[in-house]
Length: 549
Image (cartoon, rainbow, N blue to C red; front, side, top):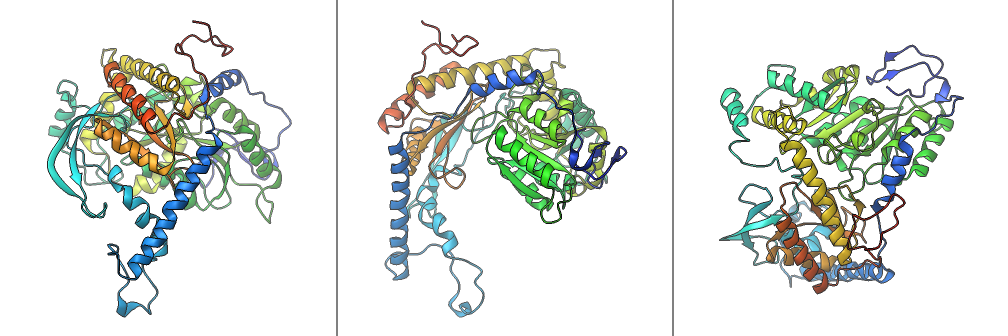
């Protein structure tokens, strides 16, 4: 376990937040300089494989202009509503309560009312089948500009699913694969109706936690019924007042909420920028807490394995080196990376070949690669034992549903090969192959895509608000389901479509998607890249120089 800043010399013990201190000097200062170790070269090569190409200047100008136009029209439509020319569909304060403190702030709803409502048909689409590599979508139309919808009774069949986090294809209904899940449902039912600390601790929960610890190569683990709550409810148990959290600027909302609920001080470093992180660490160690300048009780670095909006991978070896140098703790959220990267699906620690013990708190979810629900915290046994008693999610939340628990066990055993087959490894390799192929083809076409070449999350930059809407509607017309994301979930000039690759996608499916992407990209002028890309991306030497074909 990493050491943290404290006054004087301390014997190893668990502090009030359940993390272990060792003998250190004031503010964590030490004389020995620690080198980054063997992982540094690997990290440098991995970082070079990430792409964050900037769009031409005219694209940014047109994007701002587009938002400016729709904002002006929004104010104009608000004026028409105020004078009664246009009907107002939103909730309003009652006339007899106009002298009360308003419960509803009209201005705060401006974006939803005038921008999002016009394009709401691109989200919350009703799916009426298994969300596998293809799914069925219920057709709906609106007669009042997306304020309300009505179903037409028709169904759009066999839409290629490019939006679900079904990385290894375990969200499936194959009766042979799901046999054990059905058996556990018959044995235990579908609900536990109690917490783990009362009468909701089943033997399969214990089995799952032992399996997770073995899979990750750590001492112990504990599971939770909701991935979001795994972060938001456990971070406040680890840090509190007098502690410092250093958070990546594009961390997930669950991490941000957990940090805010903890009461700890929060400082944000630039995305994957080691100079920015080290600067904050140095200031924290040298200056201590504001006003009093006392040493921080703990310094916790929070990062993600794969960043879900950027498609980038954490620079783990370099962060571990900084963590050790400044005696901080490290919290890694592997929601999108566990199962999806690494030769055997064990996440970024395996991908970068680092010791899992160097990560103090390993977090992940079962909602993506494992086709189930819930999350886990893993690490040293004393950390997990502490969380069992202190985490709100552990004490008050209902236990994992038995069929969901069995689904996780089934998928994890398949990945580990414990079921006597090589199906798990085959899926991991298929996902890696699909990812590299899809990314390479998109780059050839001239799209700007973000992220690491090993990341199954593939963001394609669309930029302009009008093109985001048109892209999503056109792709659905071509029976391809995509997820589009814009402001405020992304920076205002970086609206995008986010594709998620799966091992269940066949080469024919990917080629069909790429064919339509090429046509839609030309139709809406979405190919903004100015770089030249090889038609044979697999032919690269270690220096990154492209070989001639």
